[in-house]
Amino acid sequence: MIIVTGATGQLGRRIVESLLGRVPAERIGVSVRDPLKAQAFADRGVRVRRGSFTDAASLAHAFEGASQVLLVSVDKMGEECVEQHLAAIEGAVAAGAGRIVYTSQTGADAASRFQACRDHAATEEALRTCGVPFTSLRNGFYATSAAHFVSHAPHSGELALPADGPVAWTAHADLADAAAAVLLDEGRFEGPTPPLTGSRALTFEEIAAVAEELTGRGVERVTVPDEEFRERLTGQGTPAPVAEQLLGIFAASRAGEFSTVDPTLAELIGRAPLSLRAVLSEHLAAA
Image 1: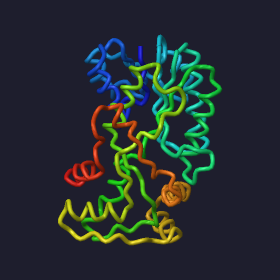
Image 2: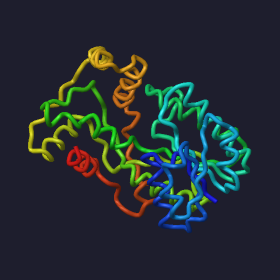
Image 3: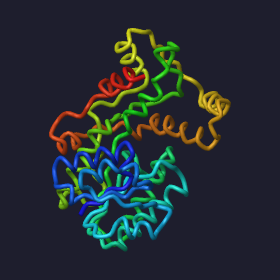
């Protein structure tokens, strides 16, 4: 049985859907904080159990019988994030899983300028020493993050952000299909994968031009000093630590941490990855 955590989130839900298109539902289990939110999967024959990375007893039940556990990284940063990942790894080991697959990120490194990448590096180190074979999916930076930054630009006429560097933005749908492919090929990728990225690395200046083309409205890329951006965020009610973490994205991109483009994702999914333009077009249409 393959157990997927975080199966009601953006990535986890898509991974389960991708698996359902490839294997019988009885081979799939999900570990979720609220089983009611996963009722649609239960109705299709997927085993649904409550599991929380903050509750070891729940993980023992949620991971029971797992041949593989896919750990979807939590939406937190810093010590709390790593502690929860360590608990999940321990739970998978205790359950007797033969393999752990973890959703990491391109640029995962203890010296990264972005906190999330440092957290991924710490989690990967724990996986190396856990005694169970593992695969760490070095996912490209989510294209939805770029879309979030751009969402108001067609209305304001400005994309006002700190200085940045090129990023190989990558769609959730493609990363989900890649994760499913890796889960179903247990001999493939021991340890970290190559970067799983879209086919182009774009700066926000280039993204502003794409937004302009899609909407027919002028969008000017305006570079905002880091300190001014921080003050703007905190003035809007963003907690100071969160503002600092967001700034880390731009500092890391300026250093080229997310600029690598690699063909591995396309090889895994058997098609060209979705472009940022496609993701942005859908996002702006929905907005």
